[in-house]
View: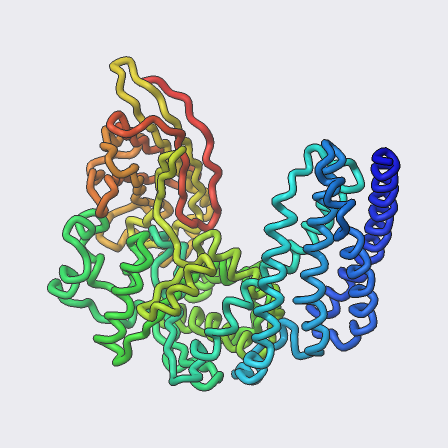
Length: 576
């Protein structure tokens, strides 16, 4: 009798597995179709597909819910596959019930378009109306992602393994966007001025004059959001700010940081980005605005031209006043080099060009000339590369900044690794860093005296053609007239290496004179400041040795500041 029951149970599980297979196979194309229609703002047309999908998923869920299936899950090897199938089925069912069906019922209101500005304003009521669905859909999709991605596929049979991978990929395509929208929607009305006007300051960095945060602070746009309407309220340039007092600088920046980054730090708006610390740069910037422009913006956002090129991929080309088109393909070359060749002796015209480029791109976004999913991806990519960073004194906004990964970061050690930070800063008041190409080499060795050292090689190449120096604007080269007496066409940079806290900078050497090198500190970090100067076509190297004998032995990781051309970090073998 027992054998009969076992045999019967096995047959039942086998038939149920076939049912689940058939129903899930029928569900997958429907799930994909509904996803595409909802994200395209065409949810109404997906009603029939959603109903069929719900029927298929319900039959699959019933098939994995019986006692025989539960017993089958206890059988070695076979059981692991049954558990995987049940997890997939329940996850898909949850997504259908709590994400797909509510989204389709909401109709065409639920799409990325609900967040798109129209004529400078975002429809706050529309956002409020979709919040309950975003909440349930986000919860369901995140739960499904966690459940399915946790399935170990090593011992699964081919069809089950393929199903896990397919469902995981399908959920993974949608979950980040919905999870982001779920986090954003509840706070977006307040951010857009539903409870009173909000000010946001956009600071556009010019990485042709490199700074540890990204680039010298150039065009600055103050944006005001009020009842969903977002508009530019002030435009200026970092060059338009007067120098602050020494008392101001000393109240904002420690003496050790001013020594490390030179005395203009804390005095001059353009040089607020001399630090890699986003909070410090933002505090200096908002305070200078308060002192000199009459408004203290809570939130300061820094963006470099590379990140702007990512945004332009979402807006499409922008028509500039001079008839040129600003595109994702030409933004870096035009803004970091071309403008100085067009206006070689007119910094006011240069600033006007930068301001127009920034303002027109912003207006394109606010007038709805933007693909929202592509825009979100552009900002996310910029944040991941630390090309878009922000800081706010409003804690609700700061929390959102951190959730979006836009807060930037300094070198951070882990249980397994020490991390070294490498930053570049122009040191002649030129725009020659457009022609800078770098390579980094980092390694660790135990020396003959028993000390453990990290060695960092920073290799800088000036790719300006020597034959082109005479035709290159003095504004780019510095023109030998800035007090540094650097030959035209040379580039000169500071290199900053942030050592792990507790380490000691042992030496700074290089093929360039290191007379202005310095061993300093930035709060908890020992910092080595080196100097590199390279003529057109030349390559120079600076080497920093860091003694980590006092620290636990770990592997070494490297964090490199955003540059126009981002270098690879190669492993380095050395003896000491």
